[in-house]
Image (cartoon, rainbow, N blue to C red; front, side):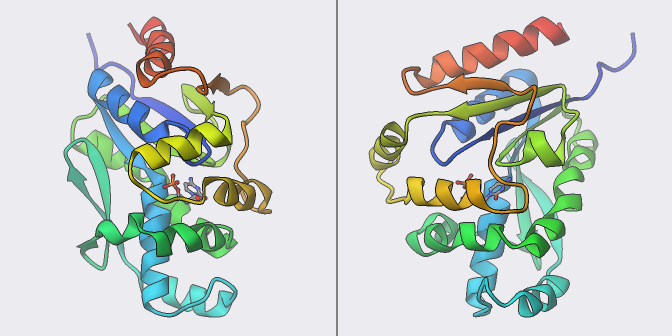
Length: 221
Ligand code: DC
């Protein structure tokens, strides 16, 4: 018997749609590298804000990006991005980054700078002996891995998503970020054709995970 085939699971959806919690559980269950691409956009946003480079100044963004070296280290089963050798701090989940991240994520040069890095996570997963990877974001099933074995799109009512954030004790402009993320020209948030659409408004986390896990297990076992 040879190695089981490497699997890629793409999970897209709006803010607080349940992507992170469900993808971490799937990573544990199927021995996958967990990759949260939102944390990559957040880390870059933090760095550009620190350098006082506004999202409107594309020339300055290009110059700043050229100086940034992206590397990866493992944090448990999750891929952690290092910029200039440094991991992101808790600030990337704070209000300032929440308020700005969608504006930087809409800049085509920022997305291009992350494209190869995100695809390169397959090599990280293989190198560390994972069976595959589960990557969460906004454009994973549409742009990063359109041929992934599994592509899920999670959505939930905006009021329910705002309530989830509140329960986590976080202030987040869920609806506003979704509006910007869905309406940008480059790689907008959308359910790509052929992806499995799951409405989690009335489902708890276990129910969402079981829906996805059943489909994955049926195909790979
Ligand atoms: O998943 P998150 O809410 O932490 O993501 C933060 C922001 O990053 C989100 O508002 C839009 C952007 N993002 C993106 O444009 N593409 C991705 N693949 C992941 C995140």
